[in-house]
Image: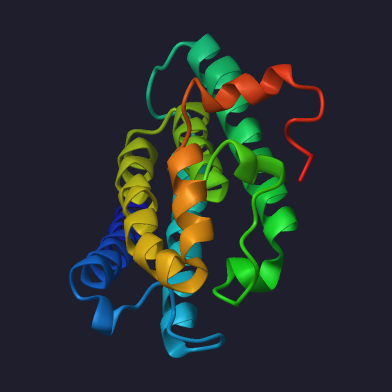
Length: 199
């Protein structure tokens, strides 16, 4: 069962990465971002992302504790990364809106977590995957989590040209001032009591 789940998860993650690479290299045939709201491409990508995440989650449950990772790595580092990642991704989805997160149109969002990262949802998902891999102490889950990170790192490269086309100079300025993922400079907003929430 574990091996079938593992290979099924890897297949979904690999196909997601291939779709993103196609979108980067051949933007005229892009799969993500979808060409319009409710297009089949959007449903395909969300099916692959949710299938990947669900597979990693299930794999961690069935393979729980198969590695002898130190308890502090599992329960301190793993729990922190998992909770922080889920919290950041959820916050970003709430700020952006569910419809926009699923490929719908919106205005350029620069508030909340989008003040210190252009892609806080992906940063959150990456952190959550790493954290879950550590928490479960499962070799297969750590491998699947690592592969699952690849499309999440690639997706912004597929989105950026579309965002430039959609928002023009406003997005170029945003791109100059806010890092793609996260940086120490962007985290200086933590010292500002209203930095995260102001417009």
